[in-house]
Length: 414
Image (cartoon, rainbow, N blue to C red; front, side):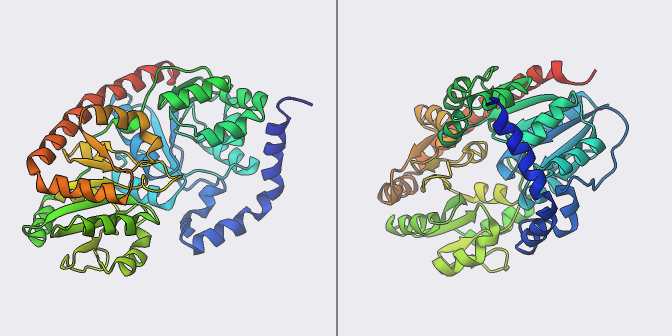
């Protein structure tokens, strides 16, 4: 059997299913999972012109990945103003974020589905010289078709779970062929590096793009209004939560036995109505006041406001198995004490360093979370020192951007 036959079979299968893609995408659009006005982009049909000159294409699938690309996009724009920059994403929430935060002159498109026709149309139109993928975006048709056209390929801040590594290990030659298509792979953490090396990848130095960036923005006038609405209450922010976490964190907040305000900012704001009903909370998207013990911040692009309001930040995605946690450097850049759950494997190395410097603490379960919330609210001097340590830690991470640019420089079009 040809060792790369699994890749060939994968490449052919989406072609057989491609005629059904428009109907599938329209159904997803009806559920809010696609932008109905831009479904064509998912089929490789361009929604914007391709301007003259060399083009660098950067891709991140969802909010976290695309946010991590923004400092790199800004640096490339500043250092290489002659380059055309194209940023693609895979979700409507990421597209909404990029609409407000991409620099002028940078084009956004939805990434094409990984089917031969869509990939061909996308590459025919955009003709990138370099493609930069972030984290775990390994789409065989897209990657191999780009490589066949001579596109240089980089995988930055690479992340691979053990489950994904186990799947690829069943087809070792195919894994080597796919990973070997990349000119540069920079792993996000030591666990990913070990998994990729076992699959035959050639790696550069470690790089975590989520360690780079400026503090999330906040409108000062609105921040002042919200502070007035909070009054003298202590604020606990549950940031980027997922189903199953809101009730656990709310129970811990109540068990902490302190008067205050819990603000829940779900990872997916469209869950706001469901969460408010579950917790008996008011909702920001409905314009409701923060006059109950729990308020749901179910809007996009305002997390910077709520980090600044918070006395304590509880990071979501870490109290249930399978999600892996979210970027703790976002609250760290604003100098807030951080509590995480035990399932933050996506940021294990980062948290290990932050625990060592007393920037963050882990709560094994709801009871431990209640104790930590109570302790931090009752001891503001300790909370303040944790926040200052987090701010100093975040400030030292900026070197990662210079490292990424140095590694990418030889791959940029002349």
